[in-house]
Length: 555
Image 1: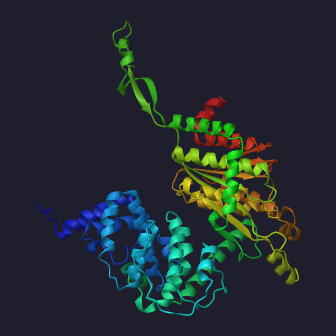
Image 2 (image 1 turned 90 degrees about the vertical axis):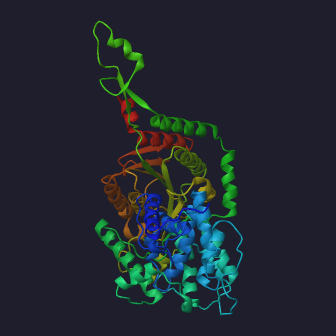
Image 3 (image 1 turned 180 degrees about the horizontal axis):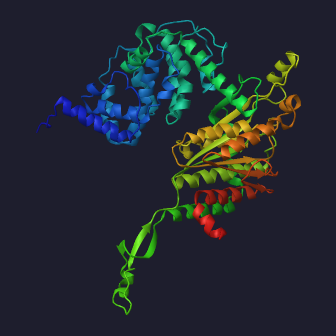
């Protein structure tokens, strides 16, 4: 029996309704390459539009020039469709049909199909590139993998004198497949590949009406691929300088600053070191984790208000209606769960002084705390911070070469690590925690910028209840910065940042591991023994996530 036919206008209407439903109200400008709502004549095309609206990150698209953007759109389309296929098997079946009708002669379409296969964990069934020999940098594949998420700095770009081989491209796609649910990491890792594709295939730049519409709005100006990067870099530096002036702070140079997922540095040795956590006495920490889980789950259970004059009838109180003094208070009302929708950020000091058993107990507590929060469906983010250079500090050397004629401000590069974003599952990110166990002698802690960074990430979260917990072992300190600007330079900045964060909707709490940090934070707990880190962390999480219970215990 043939399937009932639906006219084109009705199909577009249904596709638009499904797109809005799956996107859950999220709006993404534009549409996938070669697809528009009026062209969504199949279920696969309608699902592709819905996946684009649900998962697409438009802020990443703006990083690329007009020549590069269509190549990014192809890879972004493969990413969002892979995420949608993993979430709904029905969509996976519909989206698979889009991979069979594409133009096999087009490099961009072959790139899309191969990316879909690689992102899904499959072996590619066709090559992407035609076998042409072009001069290239032989070390590029390994450099691309090692420098995943690496920022480009103004004046350091080199001419594209390389060949983009099939193996290079597959290595980059396989590495990108590890970051499908993190659009920032995904885009950073593929930026170099996209630039090379745009340069080598100028004659076959895939067309995307969404990109063309964006270009037409800006007057159709075509800029050099690097000019947009320079503009973005200059804008970021200008905004950072404005924040520094507002905070009474200064930075000698941000050129060497790093902000990457911890996977960039984590090695096999770190994974082996992580297994050492299993040899610690986990029994007490597990008990604390289970206690926190019971508190959180109990807060999500039903709570009833009895003896009410309206609501649902309470059968146990029916006798009150026929007594000597009848009363109408025989109803009950279900009470709203007191546990709010929350996001928790754990910010960990990774300076050299935060070492030994104290570091191991902090890692163990974080491991079980994140697992417990995920079990209770609470979003959680794990971040780390330290400085990049120890004795061989190029910023200090450069300042000394400049005759030290002014106060330089912060005189070391910062390293901010992302162990887990709020959207990433802990089972996938946990192996990176081994880097937290690595001793970094000589590396310092610049707490003010780290808290400001973590607070800005947290402020962009949609959850109404935001909690930032800092695990630090003392005052901010960097030897080069302190010698050039005075010991209190970093401390003044930390106090300013704390004041700003505490006046915002974010609830800031610090746990001092070994030293008292109460002179900086308004809400602080200090632990003297490494074993107390886990107990203090779990107790704080319970009190912050269930404020009603805290008030009842206090009373």
